Length: 450
Image: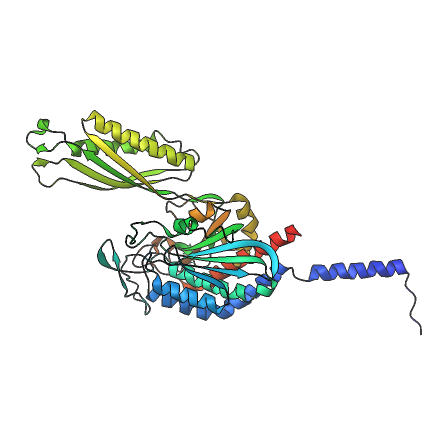
């Protein structure tokens, strides 16, 4: 029996409709990439944990990450990436070029540890030593940089296997000395890894269109992601004050100028810098003194007193005003007491500011990576030199919780503590996060360019 004939216009309409439905049903490049990332991250989880434990057992201070950098470089070269070592002394940079045209995205992990003696009792706990400020010290990954390195290495492995489908370029920054250099380098420079990497031009060739970073944190349930748009972490500046008076017998103070009394007055005056002279209606600020040193004997008024502290803020304008106000306060109080003040402010970390548009754009990516377990983070009084990367191009820095979910979050040992502990079940979330931030950004921008 012959089939009924179909009008040509109707047939064309049916074909277009079928093609449209097929296009809707087919996963987009980003969706297919997510599925592959999830599958590969799960498959690589045992190796991810093994690498993390190896790095944890062999921590190295800033500018001394020789073993870690070698491990990273070897694994990246095995992936066929373009690898450069010795960046900012001990850093590693790798470039993954996708087969398709598209934008460039950078992913960053820091590698250095801290002068802390580990008390975890784990079988892979650190027994390493290092040199810090001229002394031999115990060394521990008390801030989780071992996890950052392992997470980004695993993400690099997953993305490398997808290069024939990637639209654009991924640059991996394995950064040294986020916590500062362990010792002064031979050239006398003691700076932070990210700042030095920027100064050496790593963000110029290739220049990324966006940069992403992740930091594990205690006190947040394992696998939960916390982030916010705009100012996220504070700037950090070293404050050094020397009050110079005139030494004399403590029983005859009128024969000299007492720098201890003047220093005490300056310390009280500094408390008004934020509370009375700084607009904190938008963002808070902090001026804190951490050390006071002066004098050699109970009955001698010394010649000088030295104080050190920190200045923290979230806004560049407020930061500069704080510096000027601190100087004016200390110098004028010293002058009023007949003393002289030497005030030195060393700018260390810039405020970490998440680009608002980029943060909004990548929100769905973070929700996918954490399976919707995402919250807005509070402002952090800590500082991060990721800020130097995010000052060059739009950046997004997120936090990954690593405290076991059955633990009281308020009692978790914080970062930088000898008992700092990482629930390794969170690491796979970190891999999904870093890898999908790259692919989602690349595919979205490549689609826009078309």
